[in-house]
Every structure is written in C-alpha cells, then in structure tokens.
Length: 392
Image 1 (cartoon, helix red, strand yellow):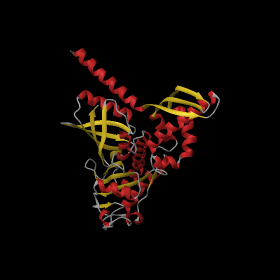
Image 2 (image 1 turned 90 degrees about the horizontal axis):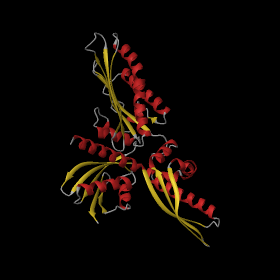
Image 3 (image 1 turned 180 degrees about the vertical axis):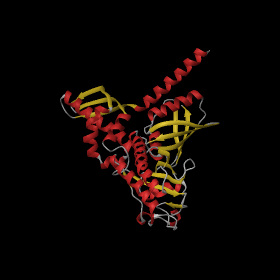
Image 4 (image 1 turned 180 degrees about the horizontal axis):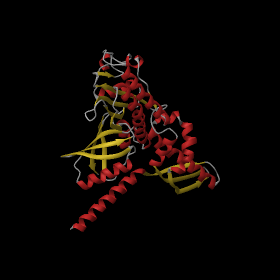
C-alpha cells in the first residue's frame, strides 16, 4: 500500500510538472501563399510571413495592440528578427504549386516564456510608456518626541525638520537605486505633490486602498508604503531602536511585489546624532534590498499580472473538470496559473493569474476551441469572468 501511495504521488508530481511545462509552449498551424515562382524562394517567403503573423498575434496578447502598433518597427527589427530564440521548430505540412503561386500550411511551436524574455530585454514587455514610475508613501514616526512626518499630511506642528531630512535620505536612496535598474522613483517631499491632493487624503494612517489611489493619482505603476519608527531601546540605556517595514505593491491590483522588515539598534548617545548615523548606514541597504525584489518581479514577467476570478458553471465530474482545466491552461492565451478556490454544487470558482485584462481574456476564451466541451462566456466584469460549460 505504501509503495502504491508513493507511486501515486510521483505520478501526480510528474503530471503537474508536464502540465506546467506545456503551458509555456504553443503549437500553431497557419496557411500562407506566395506569388514567387521559385519553390525554394516561395518556401522562404511563406515561412517569413508565417513567423511574422504568429509573432504579431502573441506579442499583441502580451503587450496589447496599442503598444504593438506604437512599437511596430522596433518589434519587427529587434524581436521578430530574433524569432529563432522563441520559435522552437517550424516545418511545412502541405505544399501546393500552381500558376497562381505556392500555398502552404506551416506548423510551428513557440515558447511564450522565451518570447516574454526577449520582449523584456528590449523593454517592451509591459503595457506602459517610458520607465515604470514608483511613488513612496512612507511615514516616519518619532515615538520619543511624539512627532511624525508624512509628505501627504498637512503640517500639524508636530513634525520636525529632522524627520523630513531623514525621509529625504530614504527618497534619495530609492531614487538612485531604482534609477540604476531602469525605474523612476518620484521625490514627493515638499508641497508640490501634497497640494494637488484632495483634502480627504491628507491624513495619517491611510488604508491600503487609499495608498493605491495615490499611486494611480500620480500615474505610478508601483507604490512603496510602510513606516519607519524611532523609539527608545529597552535593551540599552541612552540608545534607540529603528524599526522599518516597507512594502512595494503594484498599483493596478495591490499585489505585493517586495517587502523589507528590519530592526536596528543605535549606539548610545544623543538621539539625533546616533539615529542619523545609523539611518545613513541602513537606509541605503534597505533601498537596495527592496530594489532587488522589485527588479526580480519585473524580470519574472509577473509584474503587471492581474488576479481574475473565474466562475465555471456546469455539472462536470472530477475527471472532466481536470480535463477542462488542463485545456484551459494549455490553450487560452494570457493565463499563467489557474487555482481552485471554491467548490459548490454545479459550480467551481477559480483564480486566474493573467497578463491580460478580464475583457481581453474573455475574448481569448471565446475564440478557443475546447475538445469535448461547449464553453460560453455568460458574464464578464473587470475582475470576474463567468462561464457556462457543458459536455458536447
């Protein structure tokens, strides 16, 4: 029995690995024609047209039609010319020649992961113009003197120039480190940013949704939220503790893409001096750590991904549901992961991690042919897609 259980587990692991790998590779067949009389030249022209058309289709699904059109020449010269990096193989299935020319069915396999990597290397992966913008929304608190500073809060008379100067170190470190890897961190200290905000947002302790609103308001793809706290040390007389918690979130969906939590103790001495010394030492390290995490999220290709709720209505057995899920993962473009969240009678609720919006994903689903299943998009919103699925 133990051996049987082990074999079952191994089979499940291998099946999951195979399903995951297959989601990266898509197989396409496409018909093309050429007016060239030479068979060899016609074949070359047809292959070139097929690669360009298939590349265009999947690049548009990844970065959007608007960005594709804006960067059409760059994509042709820098991406499609390197198609060998993402086209795994290409061959012709049927070839017919006549006086009108040559027609051919071309079959190819391409790696979506390799295509995304190439788009990333050329700065084309995400649907934004220019470098990604980052807005720090960080509060600094002095528990010793009862003071605080937040750039978005009206002056209550409690914040000090010392705290503002400390925050400037944080902002400057983030700007320098993020700029080195191609991001642009805003420097919101001063009245220029604060005065443009509605008064309702000029308060301390903003909820997460309001912090995300600030990111949208200032057209930033990422926000860095959190707090820096100064307080007396309980372990050592005349010294102080610095507690830091910073979180990087993607503005479009609130997803956490980086987090740093640290605690430091200063040397003994006058508060402003020892805190300034320790802060000057640790703030740049915190900035580099968070920058690395944000960059890793960017490189992974999940930087702008969206979580979408998928409601599948239909009486499907466990095996049929598994079959449908496998086809959905392998055939619907723009789907990275598909996770079951809730089972109800006649209904299963999934969570999709996708590069596409719900509207784009709905179109992709509607255009996908599923074997053994009739699939209809019955409803769609910005965060949810509802399907009616039945057996043919």
